[in-house]
Length: 304
Image (cartoon, rainbow, N blue to C red; front, side, top):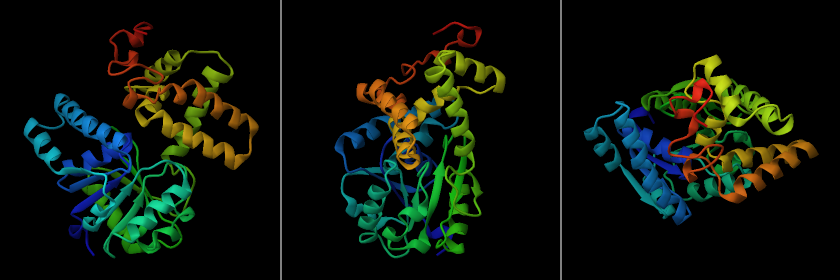
C-alpha cells in the first residue's frame, strides 16, 4: 500500500474533533464518511461542519467555491457498513478503552484488509486496545490538536505497529496539512498534551482550588503573555468539556487519588450535567458564538 491508495477516510465519532478532522480531510481532497452511532450527534455534525467551513471562508482560509466542493466530499451515516469503503479510519469516540476496542473490533469485520486504523485518543495508549483492532500492525494513534488552527499531529505507535504504517500515517498527516511528530514509543499524553495538561492543571488550580483568579483573568494573562488568540479555558471549550471530563475521570480512576475524583465529580456537576460542553453546546466557560475573549476590550480588562 502507498499513500496514493488512501482515498476514502471514515471518521468514527462526530463530536467536535471528529467534525474538524472530517472537514480537514475533505478540504485536502479526500472522500470522507462521517459515522456516528447516535443520530443526535450526527445531526449536530451536519450543522457544525458547514458552519466551520463558513468560518474558514470568512477568515480567508478557503474560497466559497472551495468550501462548496469540500462539503460535497463529506457524507454522513449511522450505518457502520460504510466502513467497507474506508482506506483509513480516524476514531474520536469517548476516552474509554473498552468502548474503543469494541468499535475497532466491529470495523475490523467490515473494513477491507488494507484499511489503516487510527485513534485520536488524548490520554489512552494504543496498546490498550490494539489487539481488539484485529490488525495491530496497521494501527497507531494519529492525534490532532486544533486541526487547522494549531496543525500539529502526534503519531504514536504501539509495540506492534509496523514501520510501513508509521510512514503512511506521517505522509497522510502532511497531505491533510498537519505537521507530524512521530513518537519513538508510547507515552501518555504525547508531547503536546503533556505540556498542555500541566498548563491546564495550573489554570484549574488558580480558579477552582486556590480561588485566586477568575476564568477570564487566567485566560487574559496567558493571552497577553504568550500572544495567543485564546487562553487555557477558551482552548478547553473548543475541545469539548465532556471530552475533558472523561479525561479527568479516567485519570482519577487510574491514579486512585480521591482529590482528583472529587474535582472530576465537581466538574461534572457544575458543567457536564448542566449541558455546558463548550463551543458545541453554546456554553462552557464562555458563551458562544461570541465569547468574551474575542471581544475587542477583553485584553484591556473588560468585555466579560
